[in-house]
Length: 253
Image (cartoon, rainbow, N blue to C red; front, side):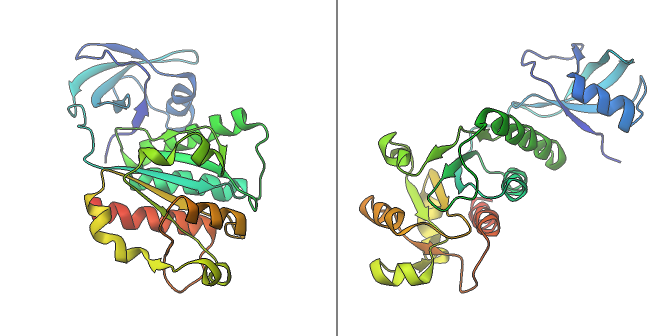
């Protein structure tokens, strides 16, 4: 049975280091897993993994000692993938973060659009929860690196803050056919395989349940973004984001 993986913010770790686990991790070890001193675990800090052994498990403190470097620091990926996902209902957006993290996305940008189902309110609380979900997904999928979840922004800020200039290739997804037919041609995402394989930094823009608005379509066209689809079926917003991420990650593997 694989050892359970836990997160620590400490970066300067080496064999013999004693690590105090965060309270949430310690409570999980003590209450849920009922682990004891001597049990083996894996620690990761966003850079590398370490084998470790629990040395103290009490109500207030859980300590572990590093026994071995499990993996060298991960090299910078040849490609970076950023998912710019329109805000949808809370549970659905959390699902996107979880699955995109499991699939290996590097960055997630929550996007407020005209048809988004939630508004930019209490964003600090929401972002803290999103970051926690990404961290938990890293532990579950045994990732070493943690994706960056950026503060939410509105659609116009993608241009005003020059966000899109950071990408070699940015694809505009989840475009309703009835709007697209009036302003531009939509190509299947599979027609961009060569560009997706060559680009070093890729962005996927995914609309909300109602799709992007006519104004947002016009802006995307003005910015020169390619309009792409995930096929003939109409996908939910969260499905489109997860499916597009999986498609690109398959090309990166």
